Image 1 (spheres, rainbow, N blue to C red):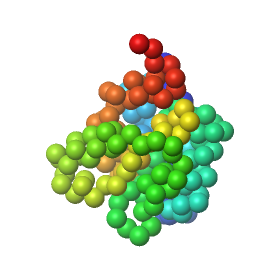
Image 2 (spheres, one colour):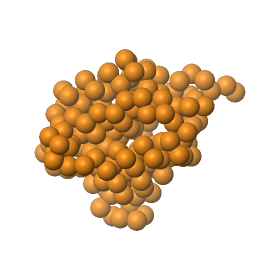
Image 3 (cartoon, rainbow, N blue to C red):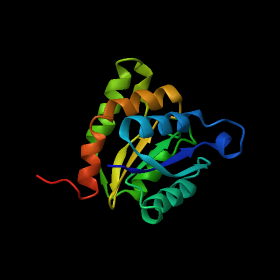
Image 4 (cartoon, rainbow, N blue to C red):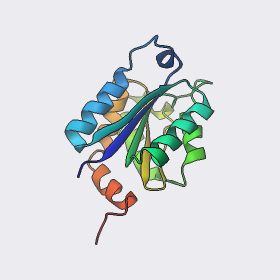
Length: 161
C-alpha cells in the first residue's frame, strides 16, 4: 500500500526563507523508505493558527492525504500553536500515539516532556504533530512507525477483521 502523505512545516523563519527545512527532509526520507509512502503535498507556513488550519484542511479535504505530518510549533514558545490549530481541524484525537512519541523521546531526552504535539483524525486522514528538529522528528516518528500502517488502514476504512 502506498500511503498518500502531506508534510506541513510551521515555521516563521522557514516561511520567510531564512531557514532550510531539514525536518521535512527527515520526514520525507522516513515516509518513503520506512512507510512506503508518497509525498503528495509539502508546504511551509508561518506560526499562524489560521494558516496552519487552512493548510491542514486543504491537505485533508483537497489533496485527500491519508497521512499529514506536521513539524514545528509544538513546544512552549508563544508562537508555538500547531497543536491548538490541529485540535480545531480534527474530529477525534488518538492520544496513545502522542503519548508513545513523548515516552520514547523522554527516554533519550527529558526535555521531550515539553513537546505538546497531538495526533488526530479528520475524515479519513491521520494528522500527526512532530517536533521542529530533525532529531526530534526522527525519534518521534520512529516511535510510532510500526503502528502507522495499521492506524492508516483503520482511518481510511480499509481495515478488515
